[in-house]
Amino acid sequence: MGPLETQWFPLLTGAGLVLAALVFFALFFVSAPYGRHARPGWGPSLNSRLAWMLMEFPSPAVFLACFLWGHGAQGGCVWALVLLWLIHYTHRAFIFPLRLHEHARRTPLLIVLFAILFNVFNGYLNGRYLGLHAADYGPAWIAGPRFLLGALGFAAGFAINLHADQVLIALRRPGETAYKIPRGGFYRWVSCPNYLGELIEWSGWALATWSLPGLSFALWTAANLIPRARAHHAWYRRQFPDYPPGRTAILPFLF
Ligand SMILES: NC(=O)c1ccc[n+]([C@@H]2O[C@H](COP(=O)([O-])OP(=O)(O)OC[C@H]3O[C@@H](n4cnc5c(N)ncnc54)[C@H](OP(=O)(O)O)[C@@H]3O)[C@@H](O)[C@H]2O)c1
Image (cartoon, rainbow, N blue to C red; front, side, top):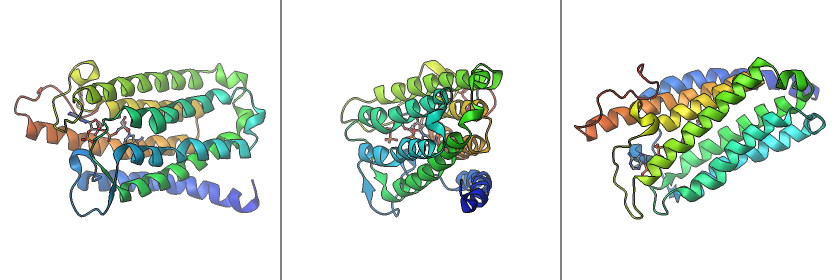
């Protein structure tokens, strides 16, 4: 790390943590205008499949480049962490968009640009951190409780997220755009198990890496998804008088 980067890296990490807190509060008042919360006045939009690919591809690309730019390639065990990131983002950037219905709602270009900016920032912080600290994640770390519990949480969250997204996709036949009440799996308890799964995944990542960039990402995920889950939940209740009364928004039995 050069002298300039040594100074700005902790500053950027700190800025990430502070911004996550601000975004968390802001999103309780303004829902990101895509999907069911889309509304006019947000400029041009893109086909959703293309939007997801453009938004998410920078994350694995920047993460991997920054990881290799450090001493990452020399560490053996740290690749276990890299693999978790790449599995998630290979799915999110390439497989998930192709599973969406061809005529899914369009995504505003502004959302795509914000997401790219965030993914470059987040990929840099996490990839660079792991590349520079590769030697810390040796055999003792990989066999230790933080990695094992974190990786287990990551895998469980990934499975919950995949299943929940699949339930939503299966609700519509090709060409349909209406919303229906999702059921089964974690939908028994919450309105947005896909968001719950994502939150568990990145909390697992924060634990497995025990790093400030990892914590920053987990907080960003919470900042994005907790207010959005509450907005989805309130929307379901307004739309469907027979909506299951026992469900909470994102955390079973809590909220
Ligand atoms: N890490 C992060 O910060 C972050 C941020 C955002 C998203 N994500 C992840 O990205 C994935 C997609 O997020 P999202 O915000 O687009 O999720 P979403 O609002 O749950 O929508 C996912 C897809 O399912 C469709 N859908 C949702 N509810 C439906 C219903 N009741 N009936 C029929 N179709 C329904 C949506 O259609 P419409 O487009 O027509 O609504 C959309 O195509 C999730 O896995 C999420 O965890 C992660």
